[in-house]
Length: 170
Image (cartoon, rainbow, N blue to C red; front, side, top):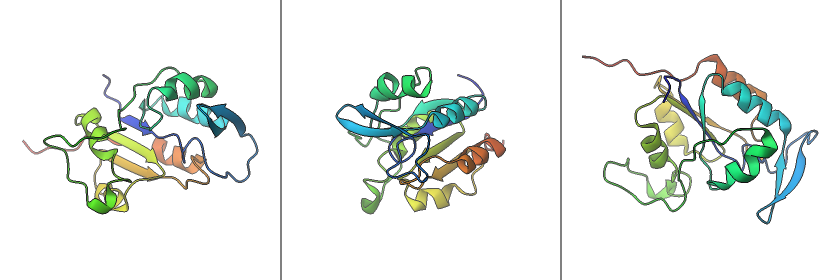
């Protein structure tokens, strides 16, 4: 474990956008029965972010992200946060009924972070979580447009001011 913040990365809607425009540079890949659009620039950006963050997959692709996507993007094997089949545990934050689908990753991410500062890039983050994290120095939640995915301005924001440990009163 390093003193660097974690960066949780989703795949669909972030690295595999629905309809990127312009679509230059994207290649279509058939993976696990799905057509996936990937851009080598996303691999470049993630490697750039790895100089500041410890990267983690936070995707329903689970371990398949390392097996299928990582090699196409030129990424090493990354830790995977188990987000599929979420089951509430004691101590998990409450998720509103209306946010069960969009917020199912929240508790697993908090559990994985275990108090470390982190950033989360996803196309499906409940707006309430984004708002509640705005004033926290240890969290940065960035929503992407699912049609465009990760863009340079997201990378620049992540690099400009990464999450830092919260100041604690003794």
